[in-house]
Image (cartoon, rainbow, N blue to C red; front, side, top):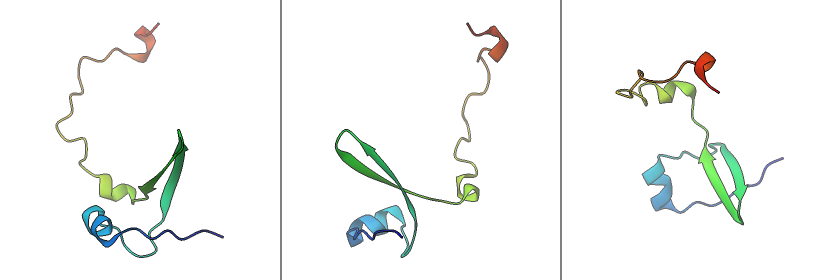
Length: 62
């Protein structure tokens, strides 16, 4: 059983939220943070252009 939360229309539109969309709920420091669950396919390309060289190998870490 879950609870329902009303999110203002402006925020729903800005975030692209849909009716019935599930959220991850994070509680920290007296705040409740709602993070929309999105399919992994929607994250395709989010790290495009990120630097992938110059990192130490796991075996070289202390």
